[in-house]
Length: 161
Image (tube, rainbow, N blue to C red; front, side, top):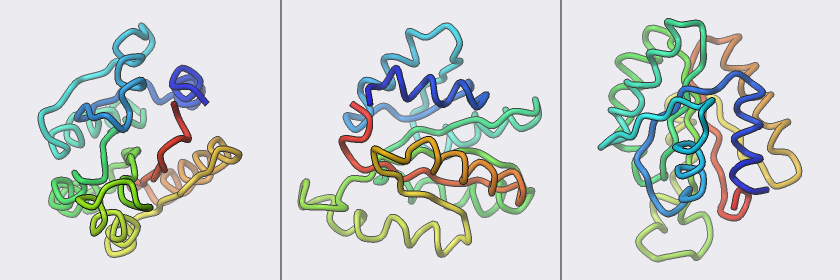
């Protein structure tokens, strides 16, 4: 699917407040968010800053989304554990999954460990494929709502162009 279609899926689920650290994994998504008048996108210098920004959506009865590459997961561990998980503040974390295959050697270790980070934190996550992105997102959002905690949508390359 293209990035416009992906953003329409988010908007249809009332996810319109987003932040992230731009990277090549989601180039088109970042540009389309900037061009979309229905999405409030705030660029961040670090992933933990992006998480703080989108967490504010909770206080407006919304879910915010952080869009980031998995190399930044280490930057969000502390705010997840000391704020979002502790105070039950949900946020959708959309993670570009580098290193799950042989895409580049510098991503190999983090690629193998990406799901394990969320397992370690007892956070729900889904790894969709092209055919079940909407369903995986709906399952994740439902679990996030029931537990009032953040969750991660771990996206392999090629699902969104």
